[in-house]
Image (cartoon, rainbow, N blue to C red; front, side, top):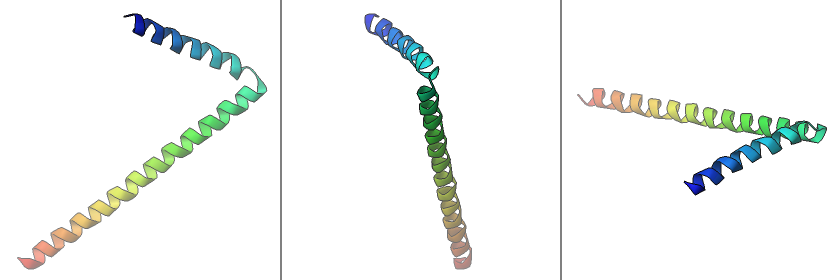
Length: 71
């Protein structure tokens, strides 16, 4: 229980510090850049997922076509 309490205190302190940092011009710039990088990362993961999904669907379609040709 003591570890959980310190965990919650750490989260609260982190939010408080981030809020204070975000009030400065450099802090706003930092969080804006961090947000952009997180968005770019999410978009890259999504793009990779959709590309791989298309590859797998194509492979399944090719396999189904090959099996129907063999029948």
